[in-house]
Amino acid sequence: MRWWLCILVLLLAVPAQALLMPGTRVVEEHHANPFEIDVSSIDNLGDIPVDDPSDGINWSFLYLPYPNCTSGTGDATFIAVSRGSSNNILIYLEGGGACSDFYTCGMGQYVDHASCNATPTATVTTLNPNPWVVSYHYRYGIFDRANPDNPFRDWTIVFVPYSTGDVHWGNRVVKYCYYNPYNLSQVDCSINFTVHHVGFVNAITAIRWAAEQGDFDKVVIAGSSAGGYGTIVHSFYAREIFGKPILAIDDAGPGLNVNQSNFTIQMLFGIETLNETWGAYDNLPDDAQDFLGDRDPIFFVDYFLDHYPDSRFALYEDQMDYTIGVFFNGYTEEQFRDLLLNKACEIKAMHRHNFFRYLPLGTEHTILAYPWFYEKNIHNYRVYEWVWDLIKGKKRDAVELDGVRGIYLACPPGIFAK
Image (cartoon, rainbow, N blue to C red):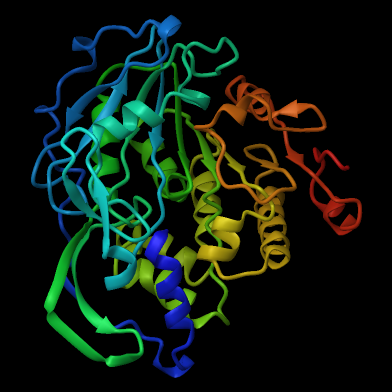
């Protein structure tokens, strides 16, 4: 987030009526149709040896068809695969911020630890994935094969890197020109860079490839942060592509509308950005676009479960998640908590038997990829136990209350009250 906080402060000083981010030029409105991409060029799962859980996880890197699938910089991109011994599969969408203008998508540098070369990255999100980063960082939490408590210890895992700045929803190529944050009328397109917001294309291609690798007994799609937002959309498509019930686990990607009174946040990360900059809603079924309207994106879960009541969706989120609630959505911690609890209640009321929540009191962001996945708990009910229960088909909710907000007891039953 380095430079991003400074830029946010500058933009907050701009008069409200001027908060239309200039310098954005759509190069390709529709980059590729991921349902028509030939996935036969990707190596087969059967060619990868079964991972021995005793020494942790070992990743194999398979490149997606280029140039339909790319990183944010337009370069070739990959999926990371670890083959398990069971006939179950987990598809995981990586997180890592979002970007939508010259400043949030640019200015930063990321050092490739293998070559010691600086590579393009964004201020708020990396635009070029690196196999070294996957191997080094994704060994904990649900990726810790050596832990006997891991619900996915013997599962095949397909890891979809995040490098497109669009929460895995995008299908556009955009050029961002320099603009003066103190004077938004000053735009200089001689200083620019192009971002491939094609996360939707990459994720769908990965899901299609995974579905062709066998007739799996259990299918889970999960994601953290931006990847959690990705599960909101890709749960629906995973169910269609695999043709069987699936479980989606959204880790800290709550899909709530940003604070409408915070003009900077609204222009950078509001619904209009999702649609106009990334082309996000163009990737939804036509009737789903009408169904959502200007409602919170999380309500696509309502659409998904209406169409596929045989599937389930689970949301994990700290009630005062600072990264999402304050930094990206522009609320106070208390405002975000109220909004999260109320919207989650609405969906729970409509889908009592296939929408589940684990909402602890706290300010942290994401849990699936961290060691404390096995430690964090609500009244001694640990997060990993909740995931185990979901996989087993049990219907468990855990919403921690602070002893004051008794109104939330009006939600459907299954809540652990403090």
